[in-house]
Amino acid sequence: GGSTLFQLYLQNNFGQLLINASENIHFAFYDCGWENFNDIKSKKALIMCLMRTKKPVSVTLLKFGDLSLSQFKDVREFM
Image 1 (cartoon, rainbow, N blue to C red):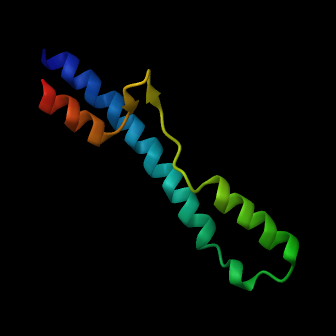
Image 2: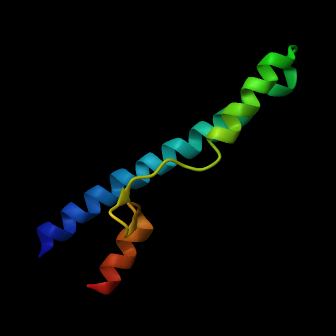
């Protein structure tokens, strides 16, 4: 019913918020002014951070897919 659909929406919305936040971290690393760093150690650390945050963090529900609003849309169309 409607409450099940709402619960499913909430779970997928929180999953989407996690994806968005992790993407923002990647962009924040990139926009931190790295071109003004003077030492090579800091630049190497930043490169490592950029590589580690390249793929967004997500929550996977069993083997159905990531919790996200696009996943919710797909489920809703199926119902």
